[in-house]
Length: 518
Image 1: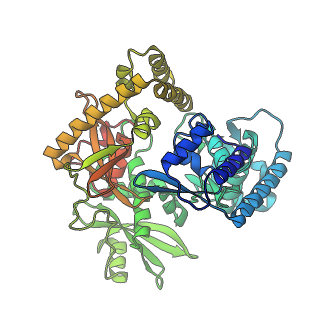
Image 2: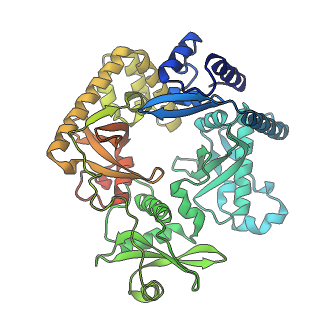
Image 3: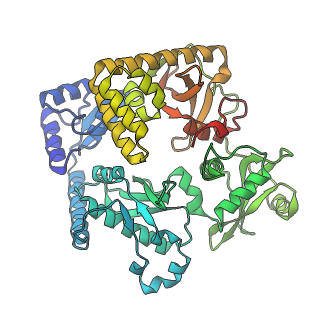
């Protein structure tokens, strides 16, 4: 990746080479980079857009799938960049003075003794995260180095993350399953960076750092940050017993309510976004429609109590049943509707096979190579000795992070081998063509998918790579114009199931949760 000095130099070169405030096309950008002998891929960027975003004083835009940039001459912004850089350097200097000179580790124990005596009461209520091991993946350090202005070392980031987590626990000791903490560093736009910690399913690690970015709350985290649960697992068990029976976890899942938890969290995010959380301020009660039904086909509502301006889980009920059900009918004459994802009288959830299809091959075949079944990749590249060796290493490796590292090497080798890439592309094109034909004969073959973060409805086209195994991946389609679809990415069956279940049950599709490996 580019360091601070190189980014500044590139910014100056762009300013000198192009007139100010003139929109520059992608072809002009490519010619300029060739002239300067700059290969953004060798610098660690998979896409030109990502490379350009890393250069200060460039305004990036996309028109008709083509990148355009504009040189910005803004003294205030340049001054802002310098001030942020100075601020981060001060933080770095202060923090590094407190960091021991031991070898940097990926597994770190946090000692409870680091909490002051003033917080003794909160410490007793805090979860056991302070006693447990936290895994900080290498890619988290890489993300932080990309996002932040100064080039901090790994041990600095470790100390900074752990301090942020401790502070969050002291401020909110009731958090159990996850923590989102602000970090004392900012990106080029002056935005605060956040780090997220979740419970880990990896053996020997209780928690792991899973997220770093400028958004403090991801859709799945909004529920837990706004609603207090005494025992979240117990609540999910109550909901699962009340609603129509269906599988709420994948095959061999350690969490029996994994799918239900994801569904419930993302449903709440949509409820908030669509203003369907009803509140009775006088009686300090709030309710929302879970989107689930009981065996009598009655809607199930989630009831919340408001204490000290905070939501606390109270229970689940249907309208008019038991004391809670009677209470909500009295307080809310018009009960809230469930979250909606498909507009009435809309055909957006149907695939129009008369339209053309464009595919982002680089992103699908290379960036998401690990989403393809390993047996499929092994079969395709069986005649390529170097690629086959890497695939065998992946199959033998059980450590997730080491597997990802080998995958990165495999991706690079495929990119460097035009024949191998063309072969993979040819197989994939053939499978997509067959799937398109199936969809043209049966509209039910394509599954609608909703993405909460973008508030968009997309379509998932099942792709069969092995006729004996049925669909193993799905091509995500977005309608980009009245004449075409864009194949944005591919999803594995787990991702597909979660997205599809948010809209409705998957009973009449090929998706069966108990047959999908976790």
